[in-house]
Length: 419
Image (cartoon, rainbow, N blue to C red; front, side, top):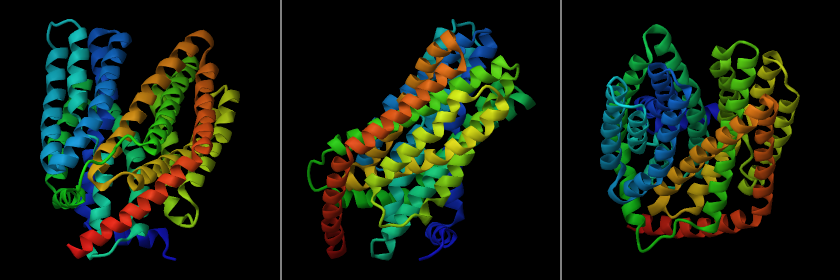
């Protein structure tokens, strides 16, 4: 068995380092834009309510639009669709800057945020779609490398959501929220378009066209289970961030919130990169179930935390369950979805995560107003319990869907080889 390092070396050798860098940087603007919108609008209006509403509008619009863009990418190709999203999304962020600095009421900032969010591309899920065609360019399926790719993408997503807010914070510290969000717009225009036009986009679309032999169902029972699973993990993100914000504010250090929340991402990145070391004989539905159990168990100490010193190790250890859980859901989603609908499926899972984040933050915020950080963290535990229930109750559904997907994949592989 090859080591994880060897697996990553083989994987990145298929595309070269430039693509890996471009695909990573292209996902940073989405990670930067939500916090950037919040700080920009709040700083200009003096109202965190207005900033939160604008950031929420951006997140919800992105969650609603992502599956639509993903479906169009399946149909027309990522090259055309993601290029439009990148340029329009960059323009949307610039429009938000103009609206915020105009004399218009702050509600127009929320509208502009929603427009920008509607166009921002979900680069991570779309990058996942490209890896199977990339690994099969040699003329034979390489499922081991596909799993390595999904492990990397899960870790890259987590890293982007650590680095993105950090870049916004750096931009605000050095210059202003306006400069920070303008930087996000520039990164999206350059690297988003570069990602869209990369040769791998055409390769993925060629496979999608060959795989389209008739109507292909998208919202199967298995994919709905996976969407619910991603909604749950999004709830974890939202509730943890809210609870951490409340605790940091109560101890007089609100500026440390982002750094502590980043600890969740650090643990997640480490665990995600190590996923390639798991035995391939361990069934994916069982993995999802046990990762859900770990999420619940490792989250229990959150109810006992009463200081930032105690919170740091708890978040770091809890993060070890996040990427493995998400990588497993996306891997199952890719396997149970027809190749002609993979883009829509991947972006739908990402959208469910975003909606879960919004719900988790809102519910935890209400409970925090009543009882502080502990009730907010209780939402995290409730999400973990729901993850356990979902994964084990629907174990059979996912197992049957994977068996059907494997048979369909074998048939498709035969058609492509004969073609």
